[in-house]
Image 1: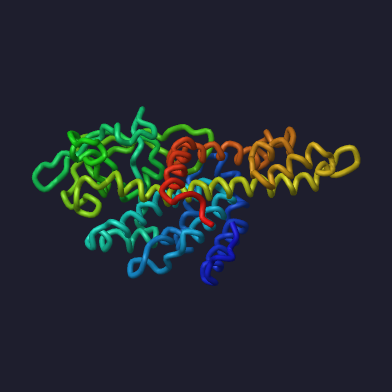
Image 2: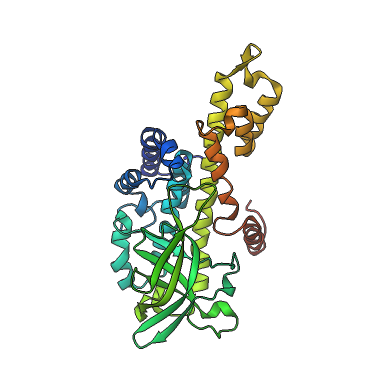
Length: 350
């Protein structure tokens, strides 16, 4: 993505993140990823750079950037390590939800600390066996005096062990017809009855936990409903996921760029039959295809046997890339969203 449409300040932000990735992330990512180590030091540097507050408006945050700038920052982080982009993705969506739909009291309570990264946030949508069918969810919140009593379970919750705030989508009116009219987002903080259970084993996306969360008699204040009015959660979350889907797409571009850059560099350094391997037509074709499609598998092919070695970063790109097929909704769900938007807007823009 080009930086032409960005302001001078936004270009500087992207440049700072690029320098952070090249100078601090890339030298250590292989060891962190292979040992599945949480990148505490890198996360702290991301906080200092203001990355956790990029979508938080004044007066709660210092710099709210455009969506294009947010996507470019995500792309740069994913170019270094996709897990870092994941560590701020759901957090940013929750910030956007609060800024857009939160009550004044909710914004004041959470947004200043979210902007600095002092408070980390995540979303809890997916349920075991539920997949993309959010309206079939079973997690319920029952009104009891001045609290909601929540029972259910969620899965694939990123940053669950380190989040101090969870945007929890649940049914506050299980009898509503259609079901989405009975859904609300609860702003849930850690407490009795909310248990983060096992970390889910993953092919890629290492270093950042993805967990199962169980809610058993968990109590949240009645004022914890995002926006203060129950029954609006499904629409709110769908709006928030628009940003989330942009973020996942930007992650994919970042991983693809990293794979292409490594493959191009390797193809110029590695020689076969007396010349750099890029000059062999089959390898050159892979590079040409990658330049237009940015596909991690082609990067593995360019590296040959070394593409399967953990001594080269390209194998990590190949493991991380599949997450973008299902993140924030499967590719099939994304296509449904695209065609609905095309119909609503009357086709492509001129």
